[in-house]
Image (cartoon, rainbow, N blue to C red):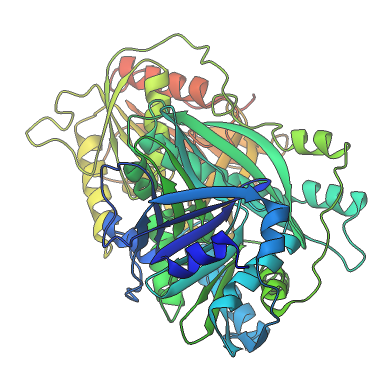
Length: 621
């Protein structure tokens, strides 16, 4: 006798099977042409990657449609019962990656040397795709593969099968895209990958993975990037919890949870959080352009999201580790790796194979690996990941006296600006974000100070309209002696305007924590730097503070500089009522962000032109 679930799926226009724990949920209903802004009941939806174009982000438009249906019937059963009722037919499938390892490694090297090395961004996710054909494909093929995936893959956030408009998505994704419940939004940055050795995971191997700098920096960078997103959609920004280890059948990842209060509804939260930086890199806008340039085809549903939406709730999963199955039996599985400045191309190629392995095993009917046991000693190793991170973003209250006033932050195409705005608010100031100065004769336009925000790119490239605009703004602020704070790209442009040399670093400092005297542990995301070599090195100090006179005719003000004594790289400057820092005061990597920001803003708000604020930085600290 046919089980009622099988009959219901066979007769449904659209259906979804979702495992989010120890039960599998079945939902059926009619397809929708678009996602309604106001939802009555429940809607299941899969948004393709190209949805990001709605936010003005670059992508190759492959025409992949929204897959969505209104839920009219739902039920759930324990996983073990579902395993009994689903078919167990074997699957014959042949295929391979569109890019072999050598070709993928070549792209990795080009991205590291040209895109990271050229200052376009701090990290990028470039995919390759396994393409295959299922022989004798029929209605039972996907259900049998889903059964094997339920048995084989552990640790997934969602294990799902969606069938809508003749398309089928099958996956076991480890990562939540976004959640919303009781007015609290949450995201789940996951990065860093431990590939299990042939004999299975070991305590020693896991500890080595958790202590690996490259793996740690990958997670910090995606945490920063998702903190940017949460800073846009949450009142006061999100706060970081974790990290934890997420074990799966063939590999393990590290993850955080970021949550915070929001006034947005479920559809708005879902759209605002696409794309996840774990499938693009950062800054997101620059990463999307690089992906569109480096990848030959559209991404389909890879990097999109599958979601269950209610009137005021959202649960969604990132569409990774997902197979797209066409009505003709064609299969595509896209996988990517996070590329950072010191990654190993061969290791990145191996990582993409490991990520595809569990899904391929489920499709082919191969035996899967097992989940690693919980190792108590890992709790301490995981906790050490938070050493030196910003207490503010970890949820600690701000303990600095509040300031008063209004601040305008100039956005240079990096959502670090949103994190910076939340930090400004936390120390008592009102803040707005814009792309240019207010109209009128006074560059402040009623604001008490202007902040020149961070952004990607070469600060010397005046052919870039964004860079040229920032130079124009900076020149005017200098001429008017306007209270100004410049951060990262803003710092570099300010240095260029007053006559310091700008140099591309031999080794980019993307997502790198360092100790800077007078500021403590701070986070750097830069490929270019201002350089000053006009004073002799002090052999007693790695850093020194020097006081020089500008060599530019655009400003007659003296400059106080904090620089690296060995390289001449300038980390901070004081010029009259202007201050600048190369590092990101707003990053989770900066330990004392609120205190540093308050000190710098307090100085420019009270400093007088040509007054004490023009002096050198202290060389200690």
